[in-house]
Image (cartoon, rainbow, N blue to C red; front, top):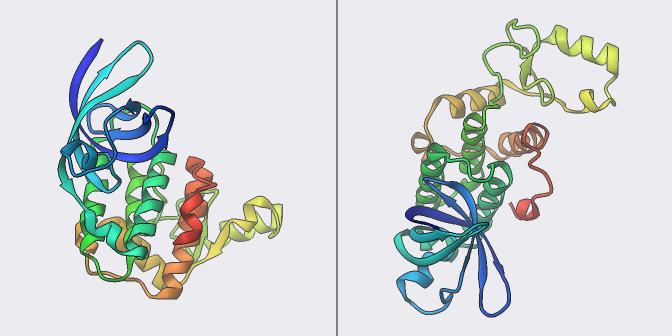
Amino acid sequence: MMKADTEGIVLRETKTSYNRRMLLLFTREYGVISAGTNLGERGKSKSALALQHFTFGRYALHRGRNSYNIDGAEVVRSFYGIGEDVDKYFNGSYVLEFTAKVLHPEVPMPGVFDLLIDFFDLLERREKGFGTLVLAYQMKLLRYMGVPPVLDRCAVCGAPPGEWFSVEDGGLICDACRQKIMAEEGENSAHGALIYHVSFDIINALNFIHMNSLKKLENIALNEDTGRTLQKIIREYAAYHLDASNIKSESMV
């Protein structure tokens, strides 16, 4: 039996019988794990607060033959302000579900762990433009997962990129490659349907988000049209390259 203390963030909770709960816990040392607990969910105890969403906590674990159990928990930092605002709550919930969807079980990802804490911090303090912050988080996560979009050249041939973003090819593509794809496969093909025309504003936004840390984007908010277009592209991109589809909270943001 292994016993350990670890920092963690609750990604998902499922209630079972006899007041027991199963948590999908993203830990710094062990990655994403499923852990059961009988710790009370109500009250103001350190354990109860640490089992809530939008909380950065420390957890006492023991691992049996096939599963983890949480024996104790305490709050390191609570981002309670996220839950006090409906828009922040829905955007935060979407990011938790998205993160749970793309991370692999029991693979430590300390960079993503810190990124998620930075996201909570910025979301709690931000007053508007929550969607821009979500997009920035997703793009950073794509990089950590090894599938960042190619933005500095054509993702197909390496030439200077044009004003086209191909989800299947993994980034910006040039006019010649887009024309070749359309000639060979057609605009209504699965490949062609995932090629988007992108303006210079969208290309500049992609590059700016790609080149700057999440914290440096604290006061940046995209205009509505640019944000919506990028939202669609990044969601399609994550669905194609990371199988991040059928996210229940997606319709709320």
